[in-house]
Image 1 (cartoon, one colour):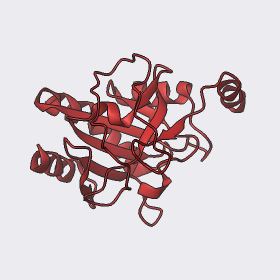
Image 2 (cartoon, one colour):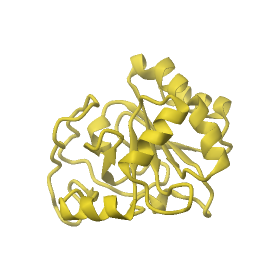
Image 3 (spheres, one colour):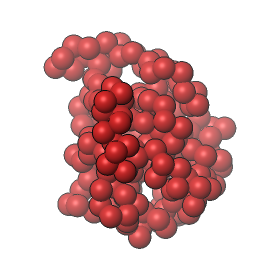
Image 4 (cartoon, helix red, strand yellow):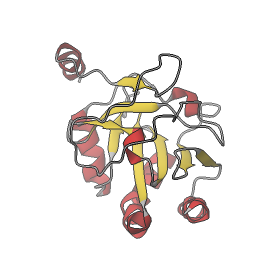
Length: 192
């Protein structure tokens, strides 16, 4: 696993954090074409944080196919952002419902994005482990590796998973506090 991370760094595939209109003034750029339908966010979209009403940073992370994915490429969809770890039992429970949830709502302009921060041993997640996760739970939705813990600020009091529902303008509409399939679906439906 460490060799894969070193190879990613050597190849220039280091996940980065991008913002549009933020302190660095960078303009959002679409990632290379990937498996996920995308849109272009407005030029005035600014990263603010992970609290309700804020726009999360534009994460640039590798998906289960090894392609770079931008969180902001899902602008215009309601997005469920599930920040999990592979070792976390509640995260595994949530993953059992990921595919069904995504399929049930995707025709309504919904995207389910799972971000895995750690593998089963608490180490960095690589593409091979993303594939193990998606295969184990039958997930076809975007599943991203966050080896640099860019989503750390979204975690509340060290509790996994962190589940945020983003509205179509990429703002955090709600944080699901009791992470059950029923509560997740209620939160999605409230925003759709």
